[in-house]
Amino acid sequence: MQRLVALNHLLTNRLASFPQTNSLSETYLNLTNFYTKDQKQLTEKINVFIRENILPLLDDAYDKAQFPPLIIEKFKQLDLFINFLKPPYGKGLSYSTLAFAIMELAKFDASLATFFWLQMVVNMHTIESLGSEEQQNYYLPKMASLDLISGWALTEPDIGSDASNIQTTATPSKDGFLINGKKRWIGNANKDFNIVWAKNIETKKVEAFIVENDKEGVSSEVIKHKLALRIVQNCEITFKNVWVPQKNKIAGAKNFGVTTNMLTNSRSFVVWIVIGQVFTVFDKCVQYSLERKQFGVPIGSFQLIQEKLSRMAGTINAMFLLCWRIMNLYEKKQHSLGQISLCKAWVTAKGREVVALGREIFGGNGIVIDNFVMKAFADMEVLYTYEGTYDVNSLIAGRELTGLNSFKN
Image 1 (cartoon, one colour):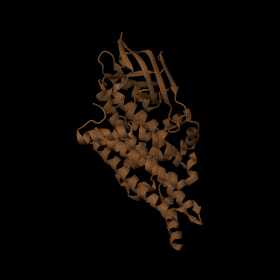
Image 2: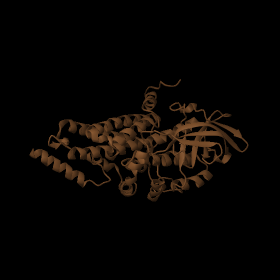
Image 3: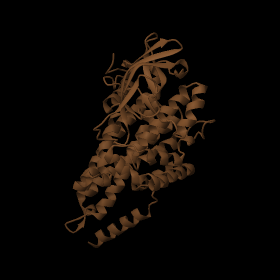
Image 4: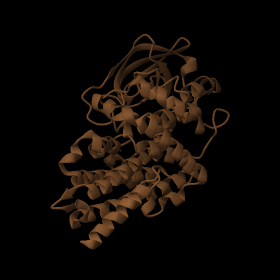
């Protein structure tokens, strides 16, 4: 019993001594050694800001499945986006710094991290990489300040994994194009504009267009009854003879190969949302195991609980190290689509295991939003599926390993 009391005291003091920016699972194997001094400072800034300004709003927004304008207004004050745009529009911080920023946001909420990832990594990167100088000059500063918020419209009601077979069309017309079709599951689609991927009926190639939501013929509807990533406003959009001027065509998006490159980029970063989530789940579980008593002792003294915590700790560290290695390859441009797909598939699958173990440790108390684990449990299902399902990403890796295509001839 004395050993148990001493262990409980040691762990409680250790948790209390942790900087709020570093979770137990980060420090257990000194993962913070991977962070540069600047990265540590930025993640601490993010952590303190979100904790003080946005955290009190998150559970209520999640419960109501709303994205209150107040969250966006407060998020503007963090001025985070400018750090990652390349000069002359921003500071051009490294990809790994961007990954750690996404991870830090995800420690608080997967929806908040997804919002940032979608605006920065997906939409702004598309315009930065493929857009004209005119498009960059107009959109990037306004997107960085969140005066313009956009969606990335690729997925359709009947087309998910088979994205190259999209049915939305772009018909060349006088000085522009007519867009017709439907898109579904598009985050932020009800905001200011969407980057719409459509098949040019003349070239038969998938191309991209900037389509403002106030255009005649554009209508969007928020998808209701969503049980995960509830703060993110996913929409179904309909385009009926929407005229888009030539200047709104994204010139660098010339074929579906470019779309694949954009997906490769987004998958490299979405895994860091998973890492942020499991870090917090693990911390919550350790704290709960010390505070919750059954049969007169903390449940953390039970062998079954300790085994779960040990398994979670090992898995989380392996997840982090794989993500870090892939990001390292990505920064050096030594990555492949298969490697990134493998990482996305494996990390999200293991993320599901970790949050399920966390749910078990919390027992009945784990099903309320307040304890985080149930929210993470539900959100992990989306992380497991979006940006390519586990199965598709696994088969992309398998194709690269064997040279054989198993899902499309």
